Length: 131
Image 1 (cartoon, rainbow, N blue to C red):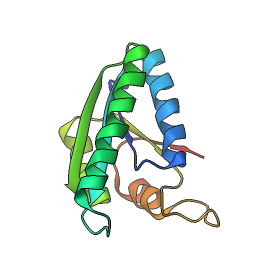
Image 2: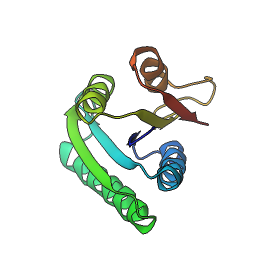
Image 3: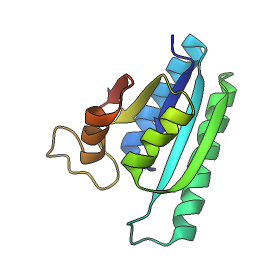
Image 4: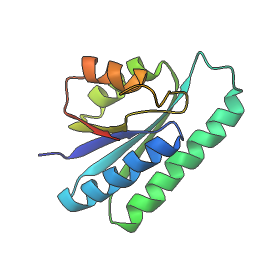
């Protein structure tokens, strides 16, 4: 049974599809959403702009999920996306993760983006990839 469904987002159009799918699934199976936005510590963007973007994304997930009766636990952290998503998944007892094949900086020429690929190889929980 999936009680806690983790949905990371980087604000890309691809991750939006994963969010919509995740909210729909969570509402049907009566699970909570663990919404995650990680400010990549190695980025060239300013912290303030990324923090604002992350807060807006998490607020939208919470709002949209709330309209379907789904409870959301928000996580906005600065760090390494792969490492910190795994830590959050463990600490929140995530039962599964939904993510998109690509993120902001990914190339459509690849079958799957580098972040999704690393998550598939390292996470111990079920992973649902949204194309």
